[in-house]
Length: 488
Image (cartoon, rainbow, N blue to C red; front, top):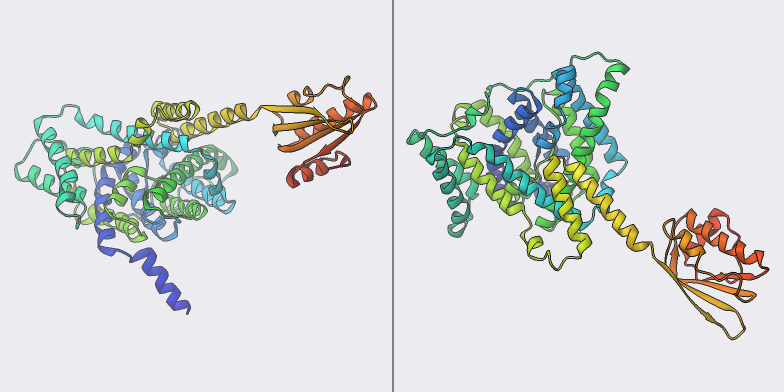
């Protein structure tokens, strides 16, 4: 029975569509090479550091991750935080920081930080996606510096194949065919175009296990801890956001906490094998999903084929024209951007539209996904708090001479002061009923406000009855210690 379940799980997670997964993984591997080199240059390290990281992380996450079909590797968001480590302490401390980043992320996964993705509003998610699409597009523009006619022709040819081939057949990923054809054309005609080899030197060598050569002291730990903490937070932010996007694209669910733990394990391995810390890559993930990659096999092949390209086909890889890869990334940018959000912008509530636009602006301006998402979440929270900070009371007299206040709205720290001002303490009759049937008591400040209102009535020798509290509000009132008035 256990064997049957194991085989069933193996088929579902690894062998559901092997041909599509293998081909999509190969496509991603090719697209990973210039990205990994570029991110290595951004971090100020040898290109092989990014390439080794991409191989180790992709292969590891395919086994221990919680989101099938998602690609994790060296990323620009993480690389942008690594410069100070290299400048201050050197490459060995970068490896150590990557390992510590993984340990922190694993701990975050154990503590179930994945649940925090549910606090990210839809408007922030859309802003994140659109900002990433813009960043992916803008990241390709430097490749046009000094470009000649051949580059534009290869770019046009790539886009024509990427968008045209699926109309004829979907048996193979069109980006893979486009890269192969454009490479053959460029090599055969000896076109003068920028290639992958122009970006950096690719060493045909295996990564090896290496313990970072640093002083194992508390002082060394304090040197790298702030950097590792920042890397861990940025890493899980981008990973969780990307996982959620893939969930929607594939209409499947994923284990976010398992993904965080897996990301942590992958970064620990990366640090021990001469790589930098990484996280999920939305660009390569979109390539994978659009090419048919759905299972762990596609992610595994992306990492394994990347290493094969480095070791066996390094000289061939160097001849791939950058224009072909730029064309593929343009496709990724166009596919990632939520065009519907622009068409429906006029119909979107102004507050949501504002949050989305500001999220996009901050991410694009800073190239920091974590800051952009945090800004969007904080802004959404402030808008929600402002809208929620309204509380009203409808008063009427009852047959027995008592005055009933029907409270509507949320009672919390933001409405505490206004709540206390709702009542006519001097002119009300001797018996007052405060009805919370259409309200909710949220925090200690709310209970304090109720206590103040009761105390004001007591000072005038008037009796107050609290009614209508729901179970959660009643428990909070009793927990804080406010004596439960009769009728409640």
